[in-house]
Figure 1 (cartoon, rainbow, N blue to C red):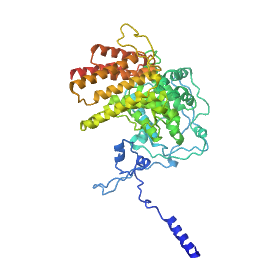
Figure 2: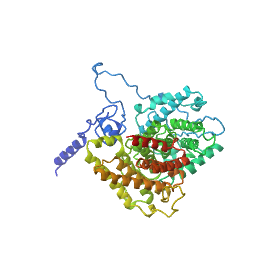
Figure 3: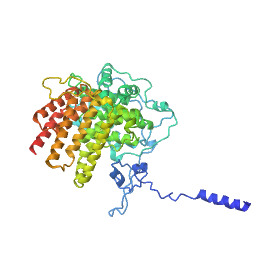
Figure 4: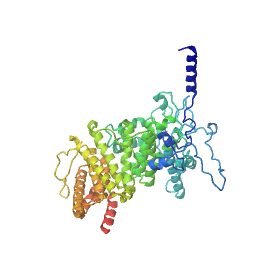
Length: 570
């Protein structure tokens, strides 16, 4: 190649390097954050874009999307107040102050600032801020209730001292959620944790030690039901020793559990103790959220799951529903699911168990979109036990009002979906190991017992078999029946057999952790039973479960009797 040819080649190469991408300048920068993360074209519809509505995602905009021109203002729109500049953001007092109503509250930890720390004027994670907005809403509602009834919560304003509740609700409500701002952290994980960890382990008072022990020995077992590593009874207590927010959440949940326990004394029944720690948790989060790394920490995940369970025990209805969604947002933002591993997976499975029951009671679909990928051939017995919770969630989805309405217009698709779930159940049952087979036990525990006990050990494996039968009952109850009288009779026979198995397993479950889910399965079994005597037997079993836990505050047997009255009158 001569010199002239080389020069022409060099010039052509230079032109190619300078050429701009054809897509440069054409991509929208005002679409919603969710579409950007999913690499989809956003239609910028407010308050939720079309993609997010279709896929049931949380729609969040980085900046207010452009508004359509209005004929009344000729396209001129009022300006939106921007996020305050960092120089205008009030500095945070990084010492978490705690109100001391009596001897049972000890000084809480402080968040230790370092040279690399700076208060974040923009939230580091939108999902976390959305969930925090739920807490702020709850706090403001409780404050309003306390104002109306001064005897409901004495000294409430001292309890919430340091929390600008209305300001929090205004700034961090879901509709005004701010922009996530991720930052690269060059420090090691341990150095990053020092930004919100205390410099020394938590010092607990005598009463707090009792609450902490109750969580470790009792309450954590409810959460760890399907976790062979027992993360919430082994790992989480140690994390809490240096994280005041997690410790306060643990003490709040433990106190709330004792307050509903049938064996609780007068002091333990006082709800104000748990509520105090609930607000201490909120106060800590208000300050710890200034550290970007905290919003993706395992300490935060454990805290939000525990707060959600607090709401569950509180029987707050809509409050529990909203917190379940808050946990869902945080998990989705970090791509956490049932196969992530470690504490993150433990949180996900514990959350799913809460969500499936809430969804069943509300006749809605469950929130999760995740699908398992792990084959049965490489799964441990504990993983197989947990898998049925996910399959049961699909049965709950099938029974939702939305799915029933959709099925009315397409019976064939409805039947095919039922068949697909039955196939999931069949595949699960065929891959069960020997640990799920019954062990020998006495034929009957008492002369009045209607069922022969069916003992599967450990208890969580027994609960898995109950969920398996419960899923069968739900599909049979809501699947269109095209077989006439014979088809109806066969369907009824299958449901009675499934209900009998649920009851037989329930007779052998003696621990509180399994009793919660067992009572839920008994409730579903009762929906399929028509014999009056068998109905009373189910009621006794449900009440027996309730006597071990105290949750829900009103036994499910009362709701079941109301359902029977409706069925019998129809």
